[in-house]
Image (tube, rainbow, N blue to C red):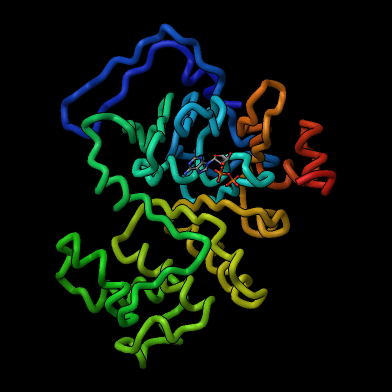
Length: 302
Ligand code: ADP
């Protein structure tokens, strides 16, 4: 395990404001960050995109997610699995401040993105969403043309130069270009469910994010469309860092390099989502260290 002491004690964080440096208090000791241990050592040094320290999430009075620390690495697919209600969506949506609009939402701890505190007062939320894109469970194209769907975010952000090329590139990266290149100005609502989901991925890619968060992206799709989304993930990870929530364990086993298993801690009076185990996917599915992980991946509960 490398850097196991990161997160313990005093740390210095550069905020996105140039020159501004914040010193974190070391009053509260933090648990060691869970590394995704590798079955084989990686050929190149791994770069952490997210470094999450002691993150806890509350909705009003109730705590949805317990104190969670882990690192998410660049250019791999990280799957988040676990039974319903264990905080998978809450976790992934907290990575790009998608929960901010929920009344009563409160996050404690720290989400560092390339060393920048995502929740710092000085952090620009629009910039966070630009770099960390998200695709949801149900395909949600706008009732506009295929082209206008993909061009929507670049236009909003003033990225109008070479817009046609940008749209084409995004559609190619989402493996949709060949299917739609002759009908770019037709309604996106005429596409199949699987095509609509790949369009939503293209829409997210059009502003060239660094990270793609996928919240159950294939759960509303048929098996063929699901297979094409899974295949896409294998190619996208060479350009983007991908975090996917899935309730489908086979899907996690097929697409993910690393897997985080969350479960519900029911020891107290509340049911709080808890990170149980985080490792390379093979370890989680073949040699889990925690009996709760073993019970879940062998279908004993969930
Ligand atoms: P999962 O994705 O694993 O099914 P969620 O993150 O959706 O879990 O939910 C975790 C907990 O947070 C659940 O108890 C759920 O009821 C609660 N929760 C989720 N979203 C909200 C919300 N908008 N307001 C209040 N509670 C919520």
